[in-house]
Length: 475
Image (cartoon, rainbow, N blue to C red; front, side, top):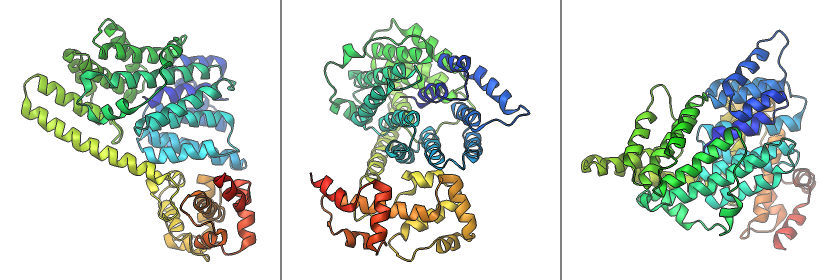
């Protein structure tokens, strides 16, 4: 499943900065024209507002300009400094998509979860975050979880003011089902990474008819049709080849190079599944266009190595095929371990005090040495006398500098962050089945020694008392 197009339609069509005609451009995939119009507003004499800045920054992600997008998003957030809740949620949203585009799935997952769990997050941002969760769960091989998230997107689509969401939810579910079906084809029995995932997945038997309705118009409709044609190709039918090639050429003109290349790679894999090696070879030849850097993570390299191994085998080049397949198997094992570790960091473990920075939504939003400050803060949460002054001294900055950096990046002060993290850890332990239910002992373990401090901070964070949490978990 490909992040770029879903993000483009979801984020841009919901942007308050876009006029109805510009929303139509986004829906149709006319991203170059839309960027030119937004760039003109950015260059105008009157300074662009935060909404326009954010929409323009979002477009930079689509075109693979990740550093420019990150800086533009930071500039847009400066105009929202007085809207603390909105600032906090937006900064987390931005970090989530940036991480997903760069295939840092752990950080993306943590950030998206933070948005959907935030009671003060706007419904539009929560819908977008559920979409992001569906995409990242697919990348992590958590197909049932991806389906659950896609169903949440569908459930929330009817509440959206933007009429594109029902169509977006439909294509999301259609693609997920199509990916499961064509990746489970008999011709891909040696693609072991995906094989065990799709064969173990259990989806309701009545999904096919309910998801067969085509989506009317727009870039999403073309993307959805592409996935259906891939399924036909993987099953041995080639009557949709012309449409597949047309869509690949169309994608190449959108200005999103990664999206176009990933479509070519999907085409190659499906062609091998359907016994069409010449089609696969042609797709791979155009896959290696110069000047386009690919993210290091993700599953694209697994697909690429599998295709190279399979094509070499079919051409009788056994030594070359074995070399490709050995690389494939080693990478598949590495990806599986990484996915297990990522999911493990998000499960509450009372004995676990260290946090993996790459999978942490706070760390993902901080820059430079302030990530070191955050790591130090997390490591010393259990110390009752932990202070902002101590954390600032650890990285050689003033308290004021640390305060400003954290407020500008995550929307809260270091003191508020310490309190929130302590309460979250106490909350996790109270919910853990094997944990002691001695509230004061658990609180002391995380540096909170006073009953009143615990009661007030815990209620502020979770809108209930620790005792309420215990009773709810036991029910």
